[in-house]
Image (cartoon, rainbow, N blue to C red; front, side, top):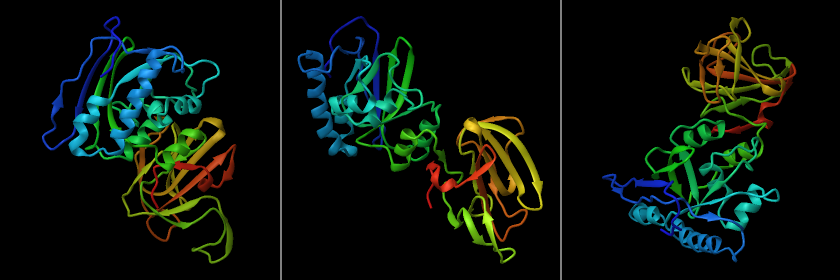
Length: 315
């Protein structure tokens, strides 16, 4: 591990999963090496690039037996972006996928990332925080097994950070879309079959052509239904059309509706996060079988959810 000794600020502990879950003692009482310029004339940056080349090769051949080697090869550096930098230019210059930089630094596209020093890893992969807070972090956690990865704890002046690091992993297409387009919503179900799309259709109840203002997602009765974005529960009720339903208000004039529920878990006027369980699939109201009727409206106007759903759904 290449470290330029400085004031003792950082301690890194690394642990990885093999059948007996061996812990390896890799720690440093020195500060992370600081890159001043993304230029090979900066000796620290040149050292970082050398470490990256080694780390990339190791990640490509990663397996259970090489877990200890991967852990020992992971080195961390700091760099403070300039006004000309963006996450994509930085990743390209450093030869590290932006996924790794984003997840290690817990960045959100909507917050930007030019907020002080960043930590740059020498091995590509995904860093999953022990305490996911953002919608993106919860989305990443929900899509991965809890049994793979290397556990690292980093002690820095701002506090202790603990991650599960999966070498060589990258964003899924849903995660990438969610990061690049913060206006997207996550799917309200983990698994489903789309039985009716948004738009004109022949109603399965009346047999007549009519406008369908949402998506019908078939799933077994009792399947968990998730809030598609953080917001406030503004209505929990039951009527002859939607059966038991929940409406959540989101930023930007958006509301989401979840109908035909078998039961409601959401509490009126409560704050929910993306991924909060707000009910379960049922067949209450005007329904031909267990499914979720899901709507998205902006300023009261129905929108096609299929264009706006960006994460955590499998058809």
